[in-house]
Each structure stands twice: as structure tokens, then as C-alpha cells.
Length: 180
Image (cartoon, rainbow, N blue to C red; front, side, top):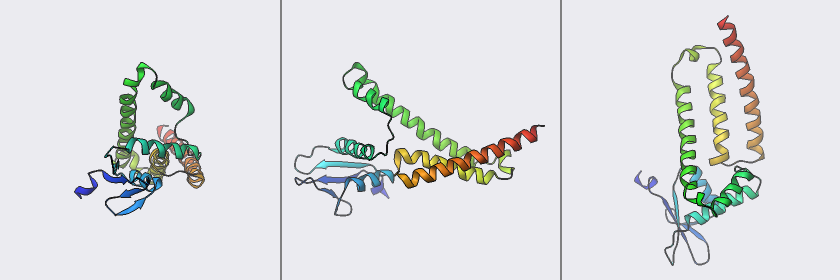
């Protein structure tokens, strides 16, 4: 259990191959992205020099996903990031981004927590279906940041979103009838 709390050590050989020290096999960037999506912290070091290359490889993973059309970062955000490297804002940007992502994670977990609590709404017909759709929606939304995306998942996300909209409209209708 303690092994999963420490970062997974990946060593880069002179041949640029990446070696997983836990499983004693070679891995790809996509494998590393999978470890991260699964919640593992990863540290990539150069075998010869001992330099930490984690940042370089994480940026490479992001660049590859963005170039394949799996865009998460809007162009204006990317532009602002480039600008931040040449301005005084560079000292504030890392803290701002870290705080923003932390707020997003906290908001998602609190929303899920509130949906699982017993409330008067939980007694309404169809509430379980609505909660399941909301969980699917949140999973689809976080999948853009932390999970694999692609044409198949985009299609199911659109279907889930339509279902959520329909169920929300039904719920609003029921609530308005209860208020009368």
C-alpha cells in the first residue's frame, strides 16, 4: 500500500527508452499518461545524470494529446500561458493554476458528496436516475482533464448530456407542479 503513495519512478536510458522500475519493463508516454489518469504520481529521471525530467515529459504528453485533437486547453489560455513566460505574471501563474485546479477537484467531490446524501429530493421518483446521469456527466467532464477522450467518448458524452437535459426538464416540471 505504501508503494502507491510514493511516485512511480521511471528511468530514462541514454537510448531515450523509458523504464518502469516497479514492473521492470519499458513504457511509452501513453503508458505514463495512463498511470497518471489512474491517480499515480510519476517521477521521470535521467539514469546517467539523475536530472528530473518529469516536467518535460508531462508537457510532451499534453502536447501530443492537443495535437491529436483532444483539446482541453482553449487557444486563448495557451496564448496567455506563452505570454506569462515573458512577463512579470510568471510568478503568479503557477499558484493561480494550482489553486484553480484544486478548486475544480474540490467542487466536483463536494457535488458528488451532496448528491449521495439523503435529502428530500432523494424521495422523488427518478432521483436515482438523475444522480446516475449527473455522475456520468461529471465523469465525462473530468475525462477531458484526466482521462482518455476521443470520438467514441465524445459521442457518449453528447448522449449523456442530452439525457441529463431531458431528465432535468422532467425534474423541473415535477418541482413546479409540487409548488402549485
